[in-house]
Length: 273
Image (cartoon, rainbow, N blue to C red; front, side, top):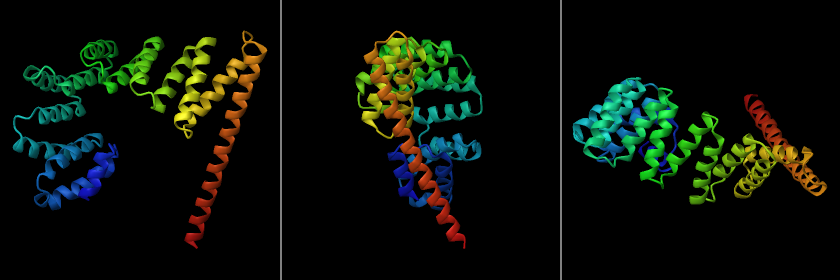
C-alpha cells in the first residue's frame, strides 16, 4: 500500500478516492511502521480527503502534521486548504496572509489566495492578482495556464492566446498547449485565425497522434477554411484534402473503439456462462 501511494505521488495522480481508501487503511493500521514516510503520506491523504469531502480524515491528518511541525508554512497552507474546502474563505485567507508576512516569496500561499478569489467568482480580481504574480515569477507555467483559463472564462480570447503562446515557447513539445491554442484561435474566428488554428491542431497531432480533440479540430478548421469564399481554389482544394484525411482518421478510430467494445462485451458475456 505504501508503494502504491508513492507511485501515485510520483505520477502526480489525482485519483483521490483511491488514495483515501488505501491511505486511510495504511494510516489506521500501519502508521507506527512507516517511519518518516508517514508525514508525506499524511499530506497526500489529507489533500485527497479534501477532494472527497472527508473532513474527518483531513482533520486527523492535519492534527498529526501540526503536532510534528507546529511552525511549518507547509502545514499552515494545508490548514488553509481545509478551510477553503469548508468555504471559510476569510479564515483561509488569514492563514495565507500570515505565511506571506513571514515569507513574501511563498508562491504556494499566493496561489491559494488566487484560488479563493476564483472560488468566490471574483475572476477580475483573480486575473489582476495572477498578472501581478507573473511579473515576479514569469517562468511559472501553471500560473500562465491558470491565467489563460480565466481569460477564456471571461471571453477575452486574445489575452488567453497570449498566455498559451508563452506556454508554447517554454514547452513547445506539449501537445495540449498546442491544442488549446488552436481551440482559442478557432473560437476567435476569421480566416487568419482559422489558418493558425488548423496549423496548431496539426502540430498537436504530430506531437500526439492519439489526440482526438486535435483531430476533430483539424477537421473543423480545415472544413471552415475550405468553405470560405475568400480563399483561392488551391487553398480550398488543400483544405478539403486535410478535412477528408481527418475524417478518415476519425472514422478509423471509431471503428477500433467499436471493435474493442464488442470484444470486451462478448468476453464478459462468455465469462458469465
